[in-house]
Image (cartoon, rainbow, N blue to C red; front, side):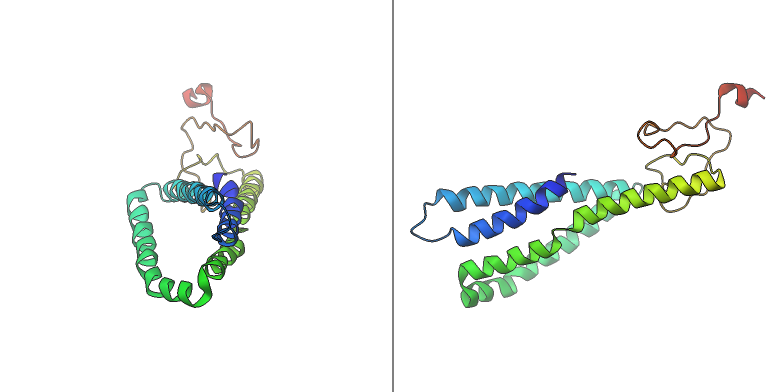
Length: 178
């Protein structure tokens, strides 16, 4: 959810920084905008690393390494056009271009949250329709494949109160003894 906070902060801070970087305006205004930009960047970075870690459980280190390579490639490529962009468009409009890119990407965290809710709803409906046992959250089968993992093992679901149908089948000790 921190990404949902950071998306508007990033866009606002870039526009704020772009249009307060005049010599007649106190340096505190762009300084505060830069601090807000740094906070938003940190929130986005932590949110995405958490997302990658949860999605690629067994291969999280490799996924984070691939993310680092792609991020570093963008970081290495930006100086190739960044200086020309700032010289041609001047600092205010060049920063506005970045702000407009951030504005275009603004809805992404909200769409991801909506898609996660949709996946939970689809999983709930399939579990109810197919009587598939509870798939533990965080497992490799949790949102992709609803194949039953364990039939005779006691299954628990920490999110049962929040998502009442996400865990349909519970076995008890009495059922295990029979």
